Image 1 (cartoon, rainbow, N blue to C red):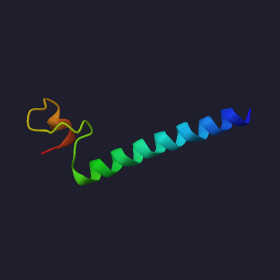
Image 2: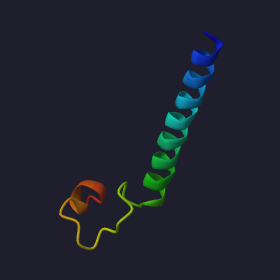
Image 3: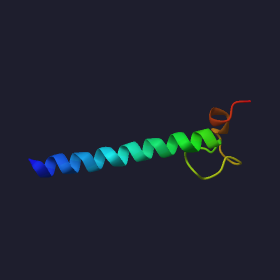
Length: 49
C-alpha cells in the first residue's frame, strides 16, 4: 500500500515537471518538440503571425 502511494507521488511529480517545462518553453517562444521551427510544417500553430 505504501509503495503504491510513493510510486504515485513520483509519477505525479514527473508529470508536473514536464507540464511546467512545456509552459516555460512556450513563454520563451520555443516550440514543444525542441527540433527548431525553420523546417516545421506546423510552425504556424506555435507562432501565429
